[in-house]
Length: 441
Image (cartoon, rainbow, N blue to C red; front, top):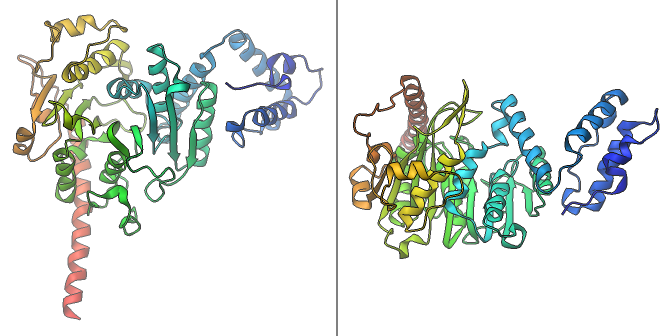
């Protein structure tokens, strides 16, 4: 738990004499909090002298009036709310540190992180950790006793956001600044029970020469100038023999060709890929494109799911927040996670009023393929589709239903794929030119 010394409490600040330097008093409060809470050393801002006394006095009074009586996880929820609003206002920059909560909740509900070591190697502001802890606590367990948290994040200011987020939720963990492509601060190979992440999509100019001997990339380095399949291997390699992973990925990765197809084939043949979920457009603040959620389960090779993959098309499930943003309602999250539970032979949950959706699609309470929603495909079927992991190739369209075709979205998807292929073609052209030059020497 985080301890607040007397001079860092609202009561003290509100009762300072008129004319006191409030900016300095708040800065001193930040310093005192850091001295009492090791996990916050060097994290809290100390720039309150930039604000006038009148502004700070009004701010402190208003915040105290709203939050003065809350307890438990209340401050944590307020912090999450402001992170989300700030990320939405920041747009592209906001997406660097914040993953929409409903996406995180769905990932957590499907991988079920009840106990063990959790890694997020692109942890942003720590939403994956917070929602994992909430999942444990909703199942009447103490997250602090059951979860060990490890995170890497490239941007120093975002590391601070993450550490504050953990602290206001009463959580501890090791969160460090690092470039995950080149640095593995926690010796991650085979070390984790769970991995969750929303990595940056389609990153180029990663220096693959520096990765040649890195054990995290045992399935091979992609030849294209795109880091998606580097991230996939970072997640895969970190799992122990029973570990599960859930992560966000660009749609184009599900059908990528060349060396990326070979890596994907190895992941599938290793019985690591367990579930793939298509998500509609407009869930993220950085891009309007739809995305895909991938789930690994290294333990499934010892089950009757070893030669199967569950595909879910969730593009018709969403709540429209405003013209440009969507999310999942709680009952939709539970419904999608319960499809995964039925597929695994587990009991569905009934905490978020998803019974109606379940009765409509699974009237007997057992898993079955539902056209337009879900399909369990065998490895033979996946091989016949060229090792594609695009749910649309397997799930199909519900009888009499609109196929959901959106020209603008599809055009953006095709343009993204076109740019990726152009980059790969340029790389191959350079390699050919280099080989010709070597032959002529």
